[in-house]
Image 1 (cartoon, protein in one colour):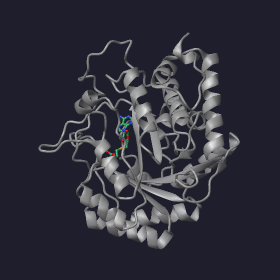
Image 2 (spheres, protein in one colour; image 1 turned 60 degrees about the horizontal axis):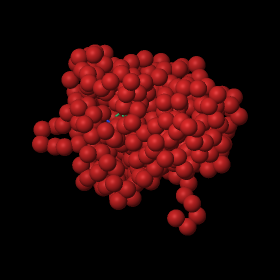
Image 3 (cartoon, helix red, strand yellow; image 1 turned 90 degrees about the vertical axis):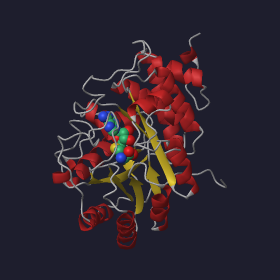
Image 4 (cartoon, protein in one colour; image 1 turned 180 degrees about the vertical axis):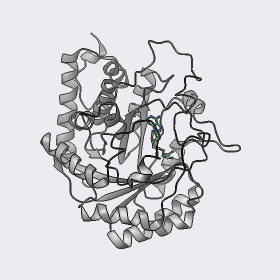
Length: 359
Ligand code: SAH
C-alpha cells in the first residue's frame, strides 16, 4: 500500500504528508482537495477574510538569494512611502469594510523604529483596523516597541525548515545569524499573533523538506501560514542559474501550481484552525484561476494589494506579479467577484485566529 493510500485527514503523519506531496493520480488528488475543502469549511467557515497589503518600502539591506528586493539588485528604483500615503491606504481599507492592513517592506532600517510606531498608532487611532507588520528580521526591541504601539500581528516566513538550504539562500549580515524560528517565538512571547510560511520549489529544496515544513507548522501555533511557489527572479543568484545545490532531480520539489495546491491542502488538514492565504505568487503563476483554486483547496484568506500603482510596480520581489498594473479599487471589485463566483463570502471584521473555546 502506498502511503498516500492513507485517507487524507487531520491526523496525517509526516510519511503520509510526503507521499501525498508526490501523489500524481488525479482521482486520488480529488480526495485530497475535497478533504481540505471540507476541513476548511468546518473549522474556519465560508468567509474569505481580506487583508489589505501596503508595500511601504522596497529598500533592503539583506542578500536573500531569491528576492528581487535584495540589496545587490541595482535594477530597481527604490522608494519609501510617506506616513500620509500609508494612512490614505488604510482609510481606503476601512471604507471598504476590510478588517486588517498588512504593512510590508524589505529589511529597511531607514524605516526608523519610532517612525513605524507612530504610523501604527495613527492607523489604530484613525481606523481601528487590525495592524499586521512584515518588515523582516528586526531586533527584538523594535518588535516590542511596535507591539506597544498597538500592532497586532507579524508575518515572517521561515521559507524552509532545511537548515543547510536556509543558510545557503540567506547569506548573513556580518556578525549576525539569521534564525527566523527563534524570532517567531519572540513574537509570540511579545503577544503578537505570528504568521509564517514557506516557498515551494526553491532550487535545491526536496520533497522531504517540504513534508518537514508542513509537519513543523503543526507544532507552531501560527495565526497565518502563507505558502507560495518560488518564482525565479533574473536579477538574483538563484534566478539567474548561477547557483545550484546538488540534489538528485528526483528529490527536487517542483514549483508548479499543482505542488503548491498539495502543500496548501495538506497544511489545512494538519492546521485546521489556521488562516491560510491563497497567495499572490499562486495568482501570478495562474492568473486566470490560481486565487480561486487556492481558496477551493484549503485557503481562506486573500491579501489584496492596497499599494498605490506607482509604488507597486517597484515592489518586485519576483517578476510579473499578479495585479501589478491595477489600482486598489480594481483589486477590490475583481476579488469580490472571484470570491462570490465560487460560492464564498467576504468576511467582516479583523478575521483573527479562531481559537477553541477555553484555550
Ligand atoms: N522583508 C520581509 C518581506 C519579504 S517579501 C521579510 O523578509 O519577511 C515576502 C515574502 O515573499 C518572502 O517571505 C518570500 O517567501 C516571498 N518571496 C520573496 N522572493 C520570492 C520569489 N522569488 N518567489 C516567490 N516568493 C518570493
